[in-house]
Length: 461
Image 1 (tube, rainbow, N blue to C red):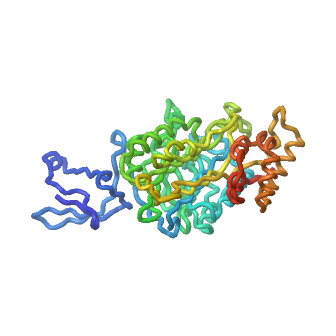
Image 2: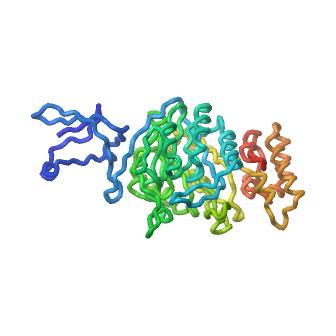
């Protein structure tokens, strides 16, 4: 029997006794390097009968008979038409809590201002923006859609749980229908310019999200989209703990050049270990990149209308990127992981320009750069004013806030370099990450210096 869709042959051999008995065949999409786009028209051919044509809705078997639906979504709309892919991975601070069996982010007018300020800051600098898991509430999606339409940017808008309060609103914004069977699914909205929102469903929850006794946890999803940005560039997304499932991860690695991993993860070191292993022992040919967008967060509960954290310490951080490098660049692999300095977890946007034409095996061109990165530091005025340490004073706080404004207003290389160097000690008090990143500014041009100290300040009002 031969089974094909359009010009792609999916199955072509003599049926076994078991297949005839069970009236069922299995097609290895991984082996065939095929990603369905949804419901496909399938042609069944045998030597002695007329072809039979059927419309079939696919599902795949992932991890102990779990059914998954992995589809290809074509996003070829002018995004990333050149050799470089520009990605903005956002590490921001937020609080999460549980309510009615759903995980929610603590939202406020100030928090929404921060999210929208971040999007404004990367306008024209990113083809793709990815926010951490749980960091974007459903109510922000309309404004994010307007932003995507205006800028031509694809936004991976964190994740949120599907709840009954928003159930009737999904039809307006999303391509898919939602019903009560979707309650408590943890979904990642992918906001595409001039399109309704596509979504992925988290299939494997962390232990904190699972059912336990009478507590109902995350409902396992089954839908994952791979995004075709151009003919030779596919992008996938795995939400937090999904990344540790070997079968699902390997399925996406085989089909994708870039994997995004939005997460709310206390310690992503294990994730980086897995990513390094996949890069060092590749499953298939081609360059690969893995981008971790983690939050810095507190987990707690709402009591008497106020958020009460389980512990005051901020968790998470260490967002970053790992990718295929040549033998000479390999030793710098960890430079892409943005670890926190002096136990201070900070908010930032990691801007990564990935050379999608780079070939580690054929790196013979002088100056053939696999990746360029820079920061946009995120500061919140209210947060800065609440810092209480021995060497922090009201006067130094005002001085640092004024410094941020001066950095952003600077248009001259010499002036900016002198300003940063003169303020080195002050910067170290409030932002060890910026201090580390601006230690040596010698022989850098204006744009290069700006790329190390650019920042946004979220007003307290």
